[in-house]
Amino acid sequence: MTSPIRRLPVYPEPDERERMSRETWERLDPRFRTPNQVLGRRSTVGCVALEITQRCNLDCTLCYLSENSESVRDVPLEAMFRRIDRIRELYGSGAGVQVTGGEPTLRKREELVAIVRRLSERGLRPSLFTNGIRATRDLLAELAEAGLFDVAFHVDTTQRRRNHPNEADLNAVRLEYIERARGLRIAVIFNTTVHGGNIEEIPDLARFFIRNSEVVGMASFQVHAVTGRGEWRERPSSVTPAAIAERIRRGVGLPRLAWDTALVGHPQCNQGAMLATVGDRAVDVLTDPLLYERFLEEFRHVPFDRRDVKRTTREVLGVALRTPFWLLRGGGFLLRKLWSVRGPLWRRERIGKITFFIHNFMDSDALDPERIRNCSFMVMTDSGPVSMCEHNSRRDDFILKPLSISTPEGKGLWDPRSGRLLPVVNLR
Image 1 (cartoon, rainbow, N blue to C red):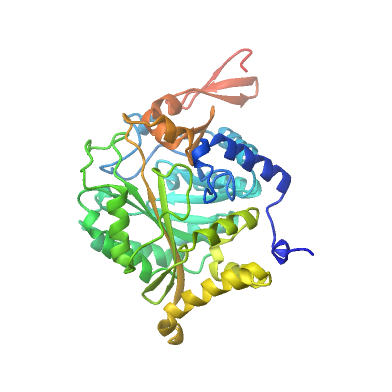
Image 2 (image 1 turned 180 degrees about the vertical axis):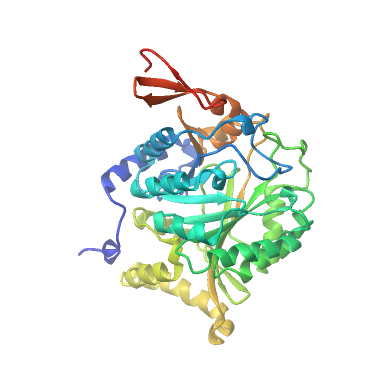
């Protein structure tokens, strides 16, 4: 008898995706090939950064760009498209791609739209990673039409925004950005760099994201990393993933969060907790590890559209609960969670979903080869994918390298500093 789960849509070319997943799985060190490992099961990669400019309109105290970044011209579209095609070739349809920089909205608007459209046409999931200053609603609407999947707004005190000295004051900026994206068919993410000056504000920030979780689907926290041209060259000992996780827990108001249920790559690199929200109450949906591991296996090729979480959830539950296991084990789990928030549900308070994620990027002078080998976060360069932490540690090696570009006369080398083409004979 055919499982009802097979009635759900799957990613195109499942045989290709299965092969790519197997290659990702085999790339991992054996001790990380665990039943709760996302890489090689549901994902061929965590995400891939596509840096479309090195320019920026802010001067962050913890900037990961290099001292030479501002002198580099925007990589030609031909090279961008080549990198996009390479991402599709290596990681298959459904791979998440961060359209980033620098500040990607500084790129010519028609080129930014063309890049997002190319990603979407290749079956990839483009996300705009921006500080939001130039990300108008009109631009977001145009990008959504071109196939944008998410917008990730980076807002925090490292950016030294005028008249916003702390994270509480910056909530006004966050609310403005939420309203820009509200109603558009894009998911909304917020990124926050955590340092000694804002770590104690995290509980309040977590509560802010809970209150706005009908729009904000993810809040990502990056640990202060000593890399790039950042000014703060020493991380306080108090700023650790564990300290951040504990402060998120306090803000959420639950006795514990299931940070260890899902593993993405190396356990020292990433932690995540997924919550459903009803009003200001949160429910941890990853408290049953065996249920999650069964989910990873059975839904490994089923795409979930986080742009419309409610519809996706209804479709998945409607099909999954027709099977004995998911009806009994999953149905019982669901009923217990619903019972815990029966009050706000009865009052018909707003319903949302939010994932809290912690990225522990490495200092440029302290790269761990094991973490590099098992990396889930890659940067696509002209030479292929490179771990984000490794890329940040030697950024100039990549951004200052001349690129092969087509010319009417054949092939030429594009110089990143001048933006000029230099003809080359017999270039391969």
